[in-house]
Length: 251
Image 1 (cartoon, rainbow, N blue to C red):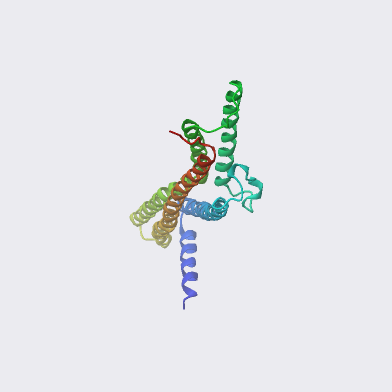
Image 2 (cartoon, rainbow, N blue to C red; image 1 turned 90 degrees about the vertical axis):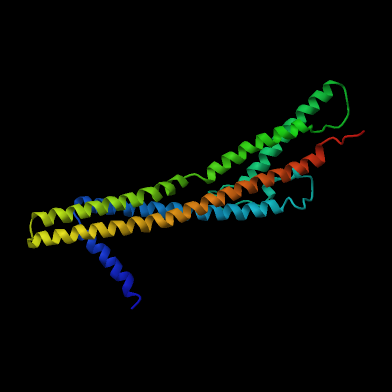
């Protein structure tokens, strides 16, 4: 009995499509296209975010007990995604921070050498603030990268029910128009086609919008949480760098 239900549903949809007029078929085609786009974006974004989270956890674990100073760590020896299409924000954060730190240290070393001093090179509190601000731009750009194409899901959430409503109104309009014109046999088929269009487009609109809404909220929350994880990772790196390169205040 249960296998018959999906087949009956598909038969109802195909029958409704066959009985619809040209405009009704266009609405159904549009809804099907939205459904395909929705599921492609949904599956790809969920697949990508899960892989990003997994590789980021592995990458961060390498910094919990480093065998050498973190600025000496080779990024090529650290965990990386198996697929080049997967972003690696933690690696970019580390690389940008490392590059900027060496740039500031070299600048400080240059000015100290100009004075003829041989004292060690340190990072000042202002230098650490510069590092933090610089890497925050990387975090912001990576968050935008992870949110790329999410607007398509939010658009589908709004557009699909409106297309379904358009099909509903159009189907009812066709039905009343045929009823008004008379009760011929051909008119009865058109009436049934109008009712079918109205019902099918409503169902399709909701079937598309509901998973799109769930996926959009899930992905927005996941990206927001991951953005917080990127900030925590940055502060972890900054604290390690501060312990190594900040001058100890002596009274």
